[in-house]
Length: 637
Image (cartoon, rainbow, N blue to C red; front, side):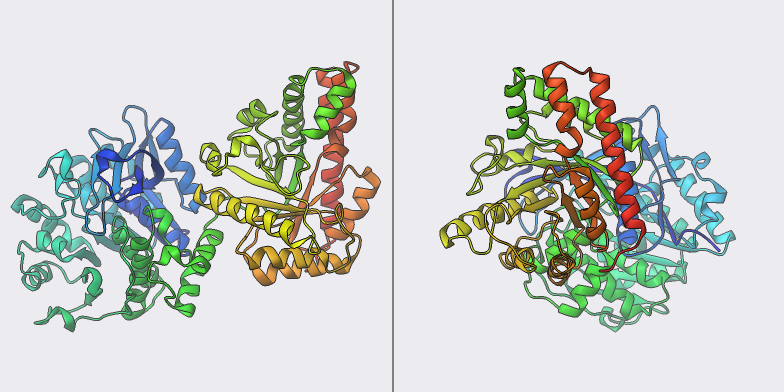
């Protein structure tokens, strides 16, 4: 038995995608950063579809190399074969979307890390751990990388593993075009044809566009090119034909491309063809390696390609397995798939990275309360920022590098604390509401167009507190709903998760249905928070109704956390015991119960830094233990 379904070999880069659409690459003003390179895209794409995938490549010993490695781990890709090159930089690609036909790109690959892959990087034990090895054409263009690919293929065949080739022909990566010709897909070259043909017998599956089979077969007549390839290898050939779909040939090449095996196609609006072939290959490999017939495998491939051409970026566009099934069941509702809100919600929620099955959050995002404490103690307002750094130390002390711990901290009084928390492994929530506002208004840093979110690290979660009640006056309710809906849209545009906190009990009477009604209403207006933060409700029915409302509207919601409202520890323990009976409630986000006494003493100068940290760590640790004990008794819903 092998632990891997697939190892891909070859290019690994960072794609910098122009955010602006419809202009020249020269005029792009900002870029989104994604992992890239055909084998890297395929490894991530197949992992999203449920295959156990790995990548064999090199990255630089710098920030971009670490980004690729960390992102692959988030995608579920095995990175044992990702080697760190101490001398070379990670490759970069700058890309843009000019229109539906032009996609300018520049490869920054001079002596890059992945082109230094060599035979010594190919571990026989690693190759033996996979059912299939997939190579791409670029790494046949240089003697050293070619040797590495051939070694891996040879080992795979000795082990009885399957082998696949994505021809992936980029003329300028073979030295046939200048740096400005990255968009070029075909230049005739006898040398490239000869090199490809020398390796074709090593593969069980060969995939390419018509132009790629032209270079592999040495003819611009597609049928003749396919026949030339067939004379060299008995491999199954898959010819991609753009909007006409793809065809599979297992035996002799017929007199018409239409005579090949086909799969269901998906007519959609083309937005961005870059990365579409890697999405197609991901779906094809999913079908092939799970024993599906070719029509079914092509259906997977065509659908994955359709997703890719409909969205921005390569790997970020590829579907999860759940999303693919949803698409098959539901069909095309909008040919511009990226504008199908329901489909995009499934895409977002089933491709989120990092799982949080438990949430023990130390909330010290309080601004109004800490400002009042500082004034009462006669302390300068600037001291609040220093105190929040102590809160972070207490949180990190309790977390001790473990999972399931987090903080809530603001960017106005706690900016330096947020800087220090970055990359620590803690879940980080960051509030946007102006404290105590009703109707809801936001912190000045967010800006009137909510553009301030573009400055946030993507690991930050947008947290918004809304004092909202179903019986609010219509004008007030509409005002608050509009603000939350706009904030939700801005968060998604900036690839930020969102936590929506609602507290109805402060503004009106509540019963067992109040919170559930609020949850239903926000989903009704198109707000799908990743997290809900709810006050500690008093009855089992109220929790059951709230959880049912979330599940009914969004089966992929991350979950609910319970807030504290400055309750005594004994009261919190009682509320935890009730809330923990519901699986959708993942934990707590508690603040003043943990930091209140320490803040008053520290701001007044009666306790030291170390004493404040120790007191808060003790209380936070105790609450974590209370939650864990309550959860251990098992959930109900």
